[in-house]
Image (tube, rainbow, N blue to C red; front, side, top):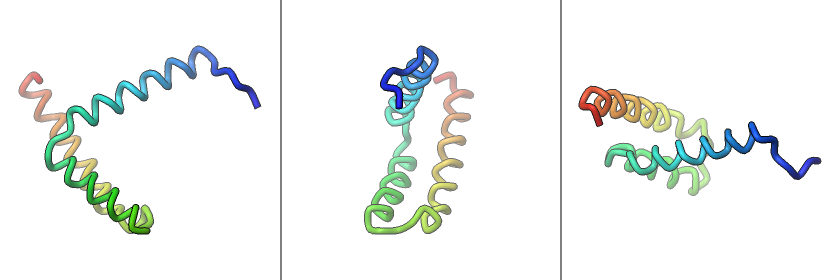
Length: 74
């Protein structure tokens, strides 16, 4: 197993980290509520299939929020 990442892998990891931070910083209260519900249910033992509807809702809300912010120029 290799210990060193290639330059491309390092860039990808940096981008993923930045995007993740931006997503967390820009979440709406509804996104936070849905994410918390998903987390709590998974922590309590639910499987991903059990929360698929919440994941789908979170995806829709995040997409709608992104589109709204883009229209508003934010």
